[in-house]
Image (cartoon, rainbow, N blue to C red; front, side, top):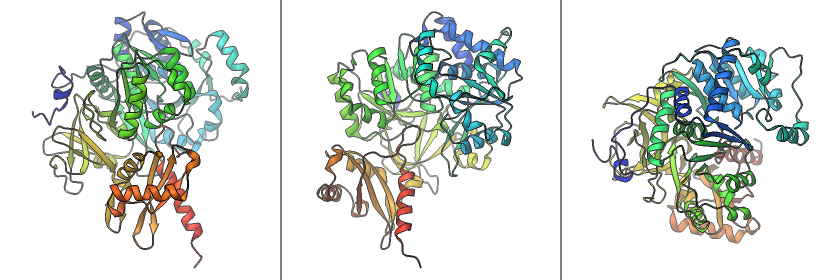
Length: 573
């Protein structure tokens, strides 16, 4: 074993040389926390608190209800819920009976939902009543037997439930009462019958969760993960963060995403900590919760932290009790990190915003920046239990430190497979000469001699300008280092001379400042810091950049819109 094999030993202090993944299912990890900390708060939702005893009881009732309705070990249930208690209860209940939870965004289109249901073979759906209309047209095209309808008010206090019905609830069209496929959440639990003694029905390494992530097709791929994957993440995160039963985390990252489910829920539940559920995202709501709950840990994507810095009320947040702040899901620029670190310090905090890197294929983070050892534009070092190397994309040969190639990952969080796609699975998970199974990330990057990993670009996002490779992320970092730029996204656009050229979409700090003068200034700035092929030939100013449902910059939307404009402008032959 070398320092480069296990770089965290140098930076994380007294951590073990490897992690011990518990021989347990996710439900068993929750049950252990309930046994150790029965009276501590597990969940907070809109003022309602659940102790671990109350949560494990609700999970047991839900598991009994699924069993009474014929859902068995090995079956799949699609869970399309926001961050409400029902989502956590259903997730652990399905794991208790050995069923597989396929976690989907509740705002997914009917086409996407039909794809998820057919790919996973889901026989039940759990959704919020207001999204019934997304499922009703597609159910007869899928294996689904029943549609379990939950409500935002299921676990609100009586006063808040009445308030919800008067305000937002009255805008929701209730599902028809004569639809035989529908089961109401309250009726579902009432018909559960007595809770059966727990019996393990699925191995910790068996497929327990399906998360969906963009792939090579137009529809997202299903990624099958196990209890062991999530438990390995939890153990590793607890080691490097010090997460304990005394802490809380603000869970605004969605439970249908590995970052939200893995870190803000399962890691918290494994540590006996408190997860504060926030079902709706906005900077205002986030700030309200920061002020009210003063969580120990916060986590988000870079667009979230940008949005917070733009809000005047953010300056009122007291960070004196903050233990950790984590950014993932997209690249965090050095400038953005410095601005947020300064805000934390100005508001009484003593921690820094820590960047992580990962893929849904490894649950979420597998690389994290060591606290106090940040290196500009690095994502950090591999977490305890994880290995990273950089290989030549063509030959697979491992490269020397500092050389650029494909990032490969090994360790206990690697997925089981892509659902119903053995070819893509074999292409992504490969057994190397060292005998280990390595995940080929599809990301281009490098690693220095100390084990710090640097992300350069997605392989599929590379732009070829006159045959020269241009990495959009590098151009974006340069643009965002300019004092006038708030956020930037770079794409390749058709060019008669160069085949492709670089085009930048820029959000300025002062939205009204866009002009030919600032455009020329930005291009001149890029010429100073980039090779000439990487300098944008076009700069378009935007009020906002489009984002995906989980907050990443949706560069594909910009590519499609730009291509449509280019084609519309071409004269007919």
